[in-house]
Amino acid sequence: MSWTPAEMMTVAAARALSNHDVCFVGIGLPSAACNLARLTHAPGLTLIYESGTIATKPTVLPLSIGDGELCETALTTVPVPEMFRYWLQGGRISVGFLSGAQVDRYGNLNSTVIGPYAHPKVRLPGGGGAPEIASSCGEIFIVMRQGKRTFVNEVDFVTSLGHGHTGTERKSLGVKTKGPSLIVTDLCLMRRDPEMGEFVVVSLHPQVTREQVQEQTGWPVRFAAQVDETPAPSEAELAALRELNERTARAHGNAPAA
Amino acid sequence: MTIFAHTGDEVRRGAKFMGLSEAIAEFVHDGDTIAMEGFTHLIPFAAGHEVIRQGKRDLTLMRMTPDILYDQVIGMGLARKLIFSWGGNPGVGSLHRFRDAVENAWPQPLEISEHSHAAMANAYDAGAAGLPCAVFRGYLGSDLAQVNPDIKFIDCPFTGEKLACVPANRPDVAIIHAQRADREGNVQIEGIVGVQKTAVMAAGRSIVTVEEIVDQLPNGRDGSVILPSWIINAVVLVPGGAKPSYAHGFYDRDNAFYLGWEEISRDRDKFAQWMKTNVLDAGAAS
Image (cartoon, rainbow over the protein chains, first blue to last red):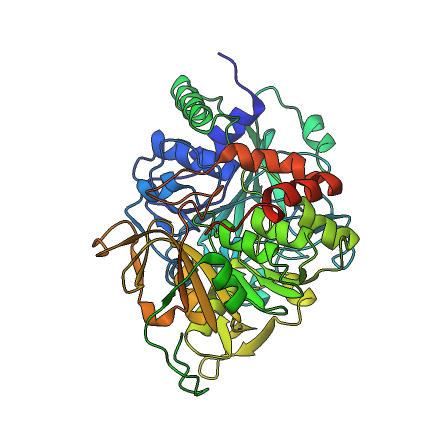
């Protein structure tokens, strides 16, 4: 049984969610992970998309957060102002899944610009829900493919606060939530070291070496005192994920969203 | 028309039923701040194309999620400013005309006031509620607060908590697409209702295009939201008015179009040719 790095990443991210979670889902990799979790070990997981769909149970991955399938399979659909005020700001979301164009060692995310803001080299889509998802959810999981251009020493712009420029700024900014606690990549798992304030590698995916991880990281990456091997995807996890992706490809007539 | 008690604007009972070109001609003016809202769903393409066709210019575009429609308005040189929180082609990639305007000032410079979704949603809510600004817990630790002078912070006068404050969204005109209206012009929106009701109620004038006109609005359907006719200026029958986006209960999203837009819009000349053939030279939808 073999799997791709992307599949390992999605499975690892899905495992982080539990039945008790109320999860705010971003599009792309987070969406695949959240739906896989709901289809496997966490059937009680509650999914919420920022388009206003509450407790949604899509059978295919949506192309966008506003897809009709999300509304059709939801318990209810609320207007967007209610979503951001009562549900997100009101503290009803236990975990938010975020991604971005760039991330740094403190989990700060950039989805705004590459280059200076006034004259960007690349104008990215922007923050969307992310800035307040980052500060209002109980905690944040980040899922991103690892590469030197994405895992950078310093993000060009802080769209969404992780742990700030020194790794300890949430408290001084008056932010009461936990912030990013886990980064899942196609190579490894990282968790925040409370003393150092930065994310360190706690688990390497099967066949991945420390050198590979460092090659794909733009800062001198640290490893935990004890580094585990991420359990390989099980047959059941892989089957569920592949079926989900196949259903999605058939429904959209093109490559799946994740 | 909305009743603004504090401004003394006159009240008119009941929306007018009109043709699309008539409605755009009467209610959209050069220099307007215009919100054509839709959160992936019910995006008012037909109305937006008529705005382009009539050459309404110098517009301040307002939208939480600028999409292909806004890419088109920007690419046609009709926008001088964009107020937004996320601008992309969902599931596909970038908005190339938006990026060309920001990165290269093509076809003309585009001023941007960039926010987060939470800010825009709160700002529309404040606008609908007749307030000058919105207060919410946001922008903590985000660089957006450093680049947008419309993002300020205040201290709660009771608890001292630092909260974000942005100006209320009060567009001159809002345009949305909905499933149906009854014969009096009461409108029903179903499915992902997004920020549409709030945007209409925050706007000075509003146009609603609809898929159908019915004798009676059906009860209690998915996310159903009713806009009473007297808060709307114009109701326009435009079946298919959200295409290529989707209308819950009527048609699916034309994913092939969204994918195809990537190639059409990458190139300035290809874009201009497509717009001429498919928008400028096409007639109004109704």
